Length: 279
Image (cartoon, rainbow, N blue to C red):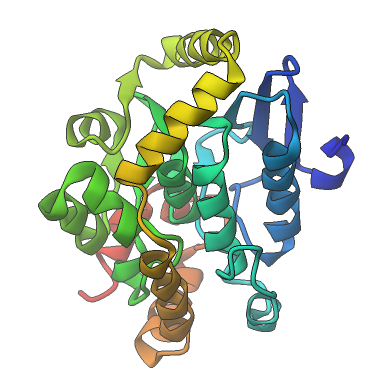
């Protein structure tokens, strides 16, 4: 199945039958919204069904942004009208759960901001590697009176511990690559000049191994580490409910007035700007 044309600006590069690159190319800010759901679903479905692919690397073609927050300029009915995915979860958490469970090894190569949805996709991936100089991870939502919807409350405590997870989620601030490494938010933070070579070498190494051995090993690690769907489902419901609260509407409106959703300082320093909303 050739999905390259279908995914549009979420581009698929088959480096080999066993090794794929999926590149987010949604300029200027790599904002993700309902218009991109079918694109990402096509990628996840192809990873689930292809018998040869063993490794997928997610990266970005947009300078400064790996993948950012949800599209708050989209018609809310576009999100509310989306049907559940195959797991029974709503579409974004459904795709992230399926990515975590797929027999394919998923690696997030983070250069730029992984904010909101970008952080959630990275957390759903099997491994995360970050540019020491350029990566920023963030669950910024609480600062705008929102609740994160893509599973970080279920995934982060298992990854970095309860206290640090609460710091990330409730502090709603930017976490640079070196701190993300110390916390365990990413596997490693590497010098920016070394990131691509390291990730590519690791992906090619894993792609050279036996697919059944990879799949069985990942399946058994999943048993010990992945949250059940019952923990993931309430997060999306809480996100949708928060969108309708006056506090969230007011804070998102203020962010928009200051430059949210447009290239500039608000998007580049979102952690700082959400910290100013209540002052």
